[in-house]
Length: 281
Picture 1 (cartoon, rainbow, N blue to C red):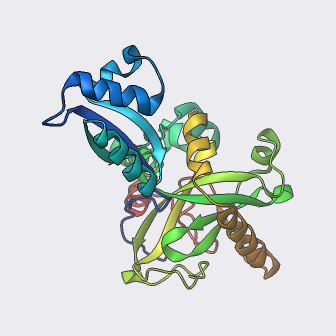
Picture 2: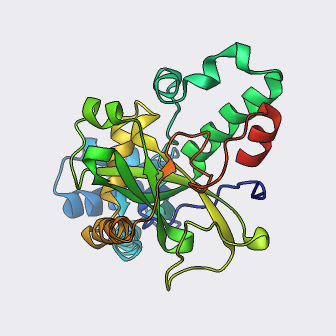
């Protein structure tokens, strides 16, 4: 059996956005002068800009590029505001136990687990990857077979994941349906998983990927949509092309369910819960 080191989460690779926050008046500016300048800048009543002059932080604008945020902050500073530019932090995606049970009923069959700690380690690992894993574009590349290509940024390749046919039907998957993969990685010390083909953008640090299709695990539709909007059309197209290329070459897909999506297709199933949990963390 192939052995892989512990899977870890790494920062997402999607493009960062920023917010501009005001934190009171700059020295040398009176509240009256700052108010007049802000009214002229925003073309609004003084009542609407009053919170910007108080002591409490106020987020004035979100989801800006770094350059746009810097320009916005400079304009506010010229009006007398103390400003900071901060990176937007999207709330983590939360796990739906109901969705997880439909996808991986074995986790909820207590009779299968000789160790409660082993079962809990799976829940912890899934929650952690869903919340803090690296975001990647995922595309349905064979709707008839419920096969998804999940892009692994750090390896610059896709992981083919196959789900029970019912999932594709229930969720209305078609070829090209866009999904979201949240991925953890393991060290390259044990080699590269045999089903992965690292591309030219490979960082050289990781040997395997553990992708989770977030659409099947969370009810946070707004969070899913926000993360998908961060991908360019080129990223979606790359996931599609890489996935179709693997299928055309006869590559097999991994079992896409969370307890198996880290295992190459030829790997035998792991029956002992403790070993399962260690390999997936």
